[in-house]
Image (cartoon, rainbow, N blue to C red; front, side, top):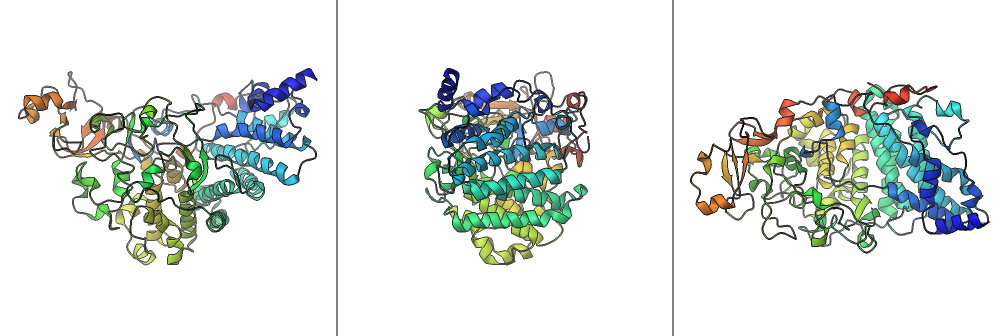
Length: 606
């Protein structure tokens, strides 16, 4: 009895999930090989409060990316990414990371034992069951995305469950159906009201819509899976789930701050609870010590790409890439008369950080197109793990994009009203002209068509323009990787990415004040291009070289030798290749395949 009281006090302190993780998560080999054997669930599950306490522990599983590392939205990333390693042949089954199932055990333990709570209303119990199934679905979505076929485990297992522990992967179709069943239960049973940092019915529906769109388009474009005949049912569910949020959720696109601030302010807010666009968010808090990194988006390890910059339309709705000189515009010129989201995502010359005494000088070694989306505007957040800005998990803008894309891929977005209640809401926030159905259908962008060359049926122009809108609106939010994969154009990640255009070697103004700030030279001895500068200018300038003192190439080069877009030596010297369908997936580690009794097989293509 004394021990039970102690445990109850620990539970009340919110650390139950940590206790369970220690008790049932000590061995992290395949399914951790030594699962639950010693827990007495009667101690933990006695009230609705216990269900809440346990499921509160799942919220640490949520994440909110602040970049699109490894994708075509990023010109260069100093640390590299897993997909870069894969495309350069650096990942093999011999050195692949081992998959982990500890989170699944924690969730399944709850789902096996919640029924021990007595004398509680069914709707209260089912609310928390729905929350657990929401998180189990997210766990398996990640596993399917990574490995395709994976074993489905709906229960925790004891050491005697040898057959289950050793079983072969289940099919993608079976696992996806199980994910959808979990999300359908969550959407039907989680209550609609509650703090937006917790999963509500709308968060469950948003996850359902997102995954249904992903799986529907994945099956449509990945014909080798043999699942194309079922893609429509997923897209139809994406439409109905997103439409329910649109019609009944009461969410709105936030326009606070006006066309030149409203978009940027979404990503530096300290109070997303009050934002009408918020569906689910992570609540960071200065006083409670819940913080994260956000300052690292600016000139730290990566910068954004030329292709992303080119995706933004002109302010009048025309295409940037239709201009004759679009490829040779310098860092100042690319921002002129553009979609306002461009300079609320990319750093425009003249940007000055809150703790700086002068405008920021870009580093051409990262490409020059710096990211400011998510960069804080409060001085004490500009250090490691110091930001307490809140972070979206789901926002209403994504729901509108899901609705539009799913209908377009189904071939049923055939009236202007559908665009007006979806993507045109996003354009209105920043003062952009509406997308007009008849215009985008009749005038297909040749650049977009070449980029997504496998879009060859339906309203091609519409599908491509919705993809553009999605790329722009959700830039740097961690969506691009899965988007490119589900559209089956992974080869885009092997493209040589470019940074800003440099008209000639020598000095340049990158802060917009008319004074030279940096210079790119062939080498330290090639000073001709800066010989005309005054002594004061030379003291103020930052120099970058294409070759070091030994004549070796540095990390960057210019496209045309002495001019052109900044490009990256590693991309030229260590070329990437995207092998289909192999590189859409990650290999199972050989160490798991050779475990005694294992019936696992290697991932498709590996």
